[in-house]
Each structure stands twice: as structure tokens, then as C-alpha cells.
Image 1 (tube, rainbow, N blue to C red):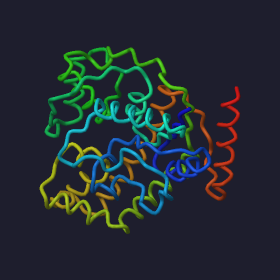
Image 2: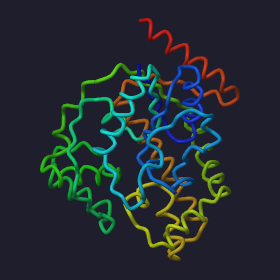
Image 3: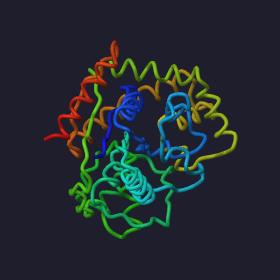
Image 4: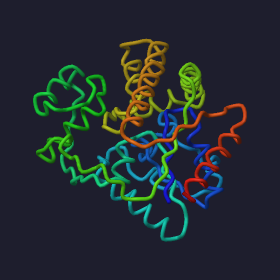
Length: 295
């Protein structure tokens, strides 16, 4: 049995994953495309060492910022982790917000080794979407979802076929339970806003400045929400308050897109996070998992 925990930032995925790992004799597998990279800690809200509570964590900090780690790489690595954990009689727990990584790991998607990487940073989102439409008229990707547009174009360039045509990914290869954490929209947005403030207090600006001074503009750096906004501040294009407001705004919009994607792509059972008594949320989900195992 595999446990999958999804949801937007700030709803308690990390805390839940560690709690369930204790209860279910589990090991945790990262399913966030930005947390595979070393040194990107604050900007990706990566779990801190003291938060791991001696639970084994996989696929965090496994590659350098200059490496081109793809969904093809993740599929191979995640499946090996899953098989190794199951072979030990333990429970794999996938946790993260990158839906395509989760589907690649658990469903029969076929990916090829992408030897070519492409820099689309000089394209506006409008021109990038136009390019995708020209190459893949049947795409169902939203025009504002730049990350998925870039992913679709890279896939097309490497495989000479549309990612839309990779339609074999509907068969689940493992016995899995999909758990989603949620909260009402207003509370979620407030938590996202506060999380940005917390990241700043923990050293986000200094972390971003370090990458900026190293002249790093790799895919790993420019994909997450936070670094590119602060780079514009360092360039003098916007003020610091404007950069932080952009991070908050784009994080809120990204959370909305995550909900939409998970609801359409995965059989998620959603649970309302009880922030006043998180143990209640843990117990509720643990009871659901136990019930599912005996069905």
C-alpha cells in the first residue's frame, strides 16, 4: 500500500506525512519538483532536518542546481524508492504538490530520457502558449500555466510527439490511497501570505541573493515562485514590497491551479485541516486509511 499526500502549500502536508510515517512504519518520498535540488531550501519550503523526526526521507537534495532533472529521471528514481521500501515491508508515503511527478511515479505513463533542455525565458507567456498551440492544437493546458506549457514544449521537442498523445497514463500500477489536505479559501490565502513573511524572516532574500550573485538562471532557479521575483528586485525593476506581493499573489494562483489539477487527475479524498487540533486531522486520516485497507 502506498500513501499519497497532496495539497497546496501551507496546509500541513509535511507534518501529516511524518505523523503517518510513525503510525504506518513508513518512509517518505518527495514529490515536489523543486525540492530535489540542493541549496534551494527556504524558497521551496523544504522540510527541515529537525522536522523529519528520524523518519527516512527520499529524493530530497539529490541533484545540483545546474542539473536538468526531468520527470523521466523522477519516474525511475521514485519507482525504485517505492519498490525498495515495499521490499522492506514498510509503507511508501509520497508527499508533494507536483502532480505530474505523482502520476509519473504511480501510473503507466511512458517517458523518454530528455537529452535536450530548452530555455524559454525570453518568451512572453502569450508567445509561449501560441508556440504550443501551433505545435499541439489539441492541448488542454491553460494559457496561464507557464510551467506546464514549458514542460509540454520540452516533451514535444525531445519526443517528437505531443504530451497529449501520451495517453497511456490512466492505469494505476500500485495499490495507493490519495489523501488531500485542504482548508477554506480565505484561510488558505492568509496562510500563504504568512508563509511568505516567515520565509523572509528565515532568510529567503539572502538565499535568493546568493543565487543572483552567482548569476544562476537555471531552470531549477527560475521555476519556483520566489527567486525570479526577487531577481527583478535585485535588478532594480521593482521594489522589495512589490516583489513580495508578487510572490504572495502567484502562490495563491498556483494553489488554485493545484486544486483544479488534483481534482481532475487523481482520485483524491479531501480532508479539512484542523489547525487548532492537528491530531484530530491525523486521527481522521489514519482511520480512513485503516478502513480502506480492510475493504
